[in-house]
Image (tube, rainbow, N blue to C red; front, side):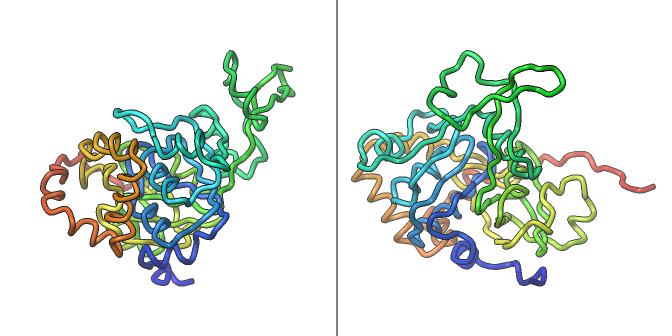
Length: 303
């Protein structure tokens, strides 16, 4: 595939690379969470997905409510700063059959993706001592260090079928740059079988090459590139727009009421064709959340 052939719409990227039964990582830690991709997966009616993420927040609550998920592999789950995830809780506590869950610590999930990215079968870590997670998750095991004889925890590699990573900018080949708060975007991309990069800006290769240290994901592991401005809303994209805290607070009441949540999905996901329509439905959003200008000092790459 040529570099230009990687650039597709969100609808095309999800149709081509996310399949029923897949394991899917939508990455980003507070920052750069691709809600636009989650909404398109919902629109296209994907089913039986294994959703993997360090902190499944609102995007996975919405996908679970829409019936996309069979299993959740995660560390902490909640509405950060606001409360619980009620669609997730109903799926575990009330639904028949219940949503399957597989829980780790934050670093346990990081270690799983790091092992997957490094093509290793597992990752050892000093973790879980004094916790009850190993008792409820048989995937957390122990290994003996061949050098010291120490007993260490071990978690298996995670190689998702699809990783979806939102970035500030990328070129047509998929060389993707991120600044600000990082999650496990790089590890997820290298571990996954298929990678969709979603960017705020699609730039030339010259722009990427001018600042090489900011390139987090190389195009050689990327299968599709989607330009989707504001695709991470209501999370944020450093230098583009702020986190929509009002939305996170409002989700507490929406998520509690199953009927109201269904109405929200009908209005804001199923009832809209794409992210452009989502933005057009919210006049004033850009003005309210757009980032101000705080430029970092330049770097001399000359020699």
